[in-house]
Length: 109
Image 1 (cartoon, rainbow, N blue to C red):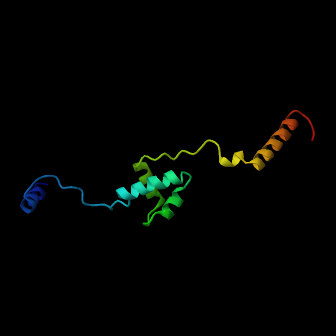
Image 2 (cartoon, one colour):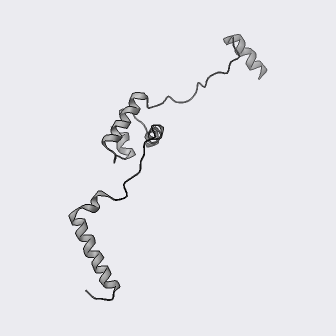
Image 3 (cartoon, one colour):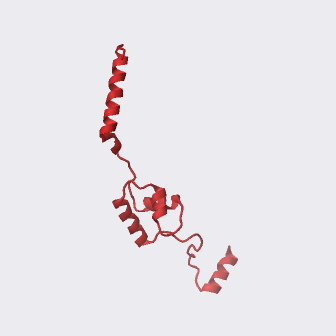
């Protein structure tokens, strides 16, 4: 350790701690994080795969997830799916619910 510090002082002229120089560069810079925020605002139902496909650089879904964490984006889904309000789905659900109620009460249909 002492040899390392002496060599560092001789080479750099300082014993100050060295900054971390390893690792990968970030995929998302400030403007790309802004792009991600805007995309989420326009398409809140987009999946991680959708966002990855629309991003201009190759990256993984984990990278997209981490970028969303970085901008503190919420990924809560609605408690009720939009399809549940369609007329054809309501009719089917209502008919099956009535049928089940009749069967539970002992009636035959």
